[in-house]
Length: 349
Image 1: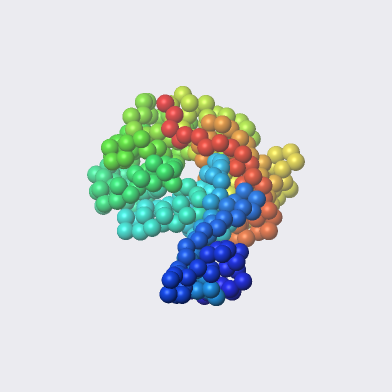
Image 2: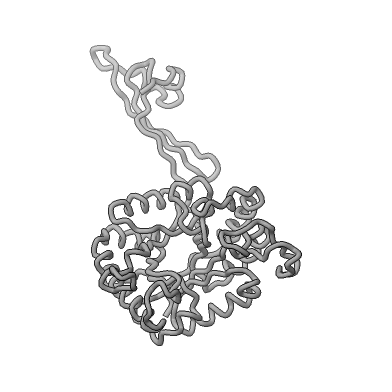
């Protein structure tokens, strides 16, 4: 450790530096000091070992608690990017061998995430949704560590499925498939009591099942005025349905394909222009900065919403969405809105 100049000894240790024993030998003397700068306290502990040198053994700071507000960010954002980009919420596909390290990094970044079952791990050898296959996957997860991250709120919910109405899950009727997902939710509930368990589907689709036993949370993703009308109407409808079913609600927007498009299409809301930038599918458009701020504000200011996670992190789909300067400015506005929202439970019964 590099010694500090002798002049600092007089500041840090005062007259203690001149102390000697009966034989005239120097004595090692401990010292501590603290300084406040604004709302932060800086502490230092060290020791004087000669009249010319002082060694600093440790330094630490104490800051006041930070209110994180509503978790907010894009789907599948890499954990390291949470620290550098200022988002506070995302999703994480669970791989048993690496998930706890990823969760530790997310916690270091003062963010929250969902823990998501990877899509193929829900299907049997024929490609159909299978409770047995999902159970085998869940049995491999490190539940002690995961449940501790539920308790400290790093994990806001477990996500057990997506695109629930798609034919890819097999020929069974929707109500039957939803019952299967409820059984999968029950496996998690038994492993980690009290955890929120979500299906990424709007509550108006989830209401095809009568009486959820283990599922706790729905997911409302606004896909723009072309598909869903006004955001006010869309989110009000989904909140009403979630309340009726006793489900909590995550709310987000479709960043990459939820834009209203160029002005000549005449499909944008008054005063909220779109963009000509293509989405990931033919005929779809990315959201404009104005759309992002407006749609997200409507979602996040609804007090029933427990998190706001959007589809999706652009680089995963070879999209430059998050690199657009106007979007980077818009996300700062959105972050301010999210920070004003108190954290809400994703479980409602």
